[in-house]
Image (tube, rainbow, N blue to C red):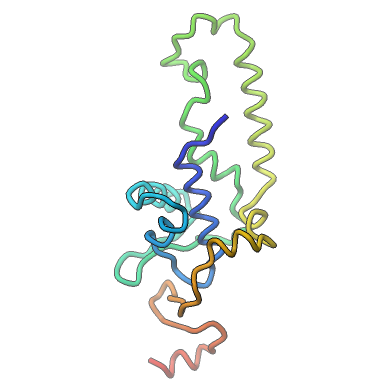
Length: 169
């Protein structure tokens, strides 16, 4: 079994956002850190946004961030969003199946059972399980400390009070 590049990139994108929760991250930052093409990443980001995993903001201060807490993003859910439309084997797609063995083959049943076990295992994991207490991943994906940009465009330093932010305006 092998995950598609899109699925792998989707998980990298979500991990990048989870490691940098206090700011909006930009596509080029993810692409650089994850060794990916920005064009390919744009397609993945679009699907992640459509499926409610991330929020996006356009414009000069735009970028993306997680749409919900990382402990509420299931790995199995993400994998299904990218993999479920692709037949695992030729015989899984009844419209295009040309396998002459499909009526007698028991291999398909074994594959279905294995695939269900795979997704059941992934359903027990959340994005938080992949991120929390993972200093090595954080070291690779953490952006240098910079002033975070809120989704509303209000700049605020970590630890600064809301009144201090208002006074700065």
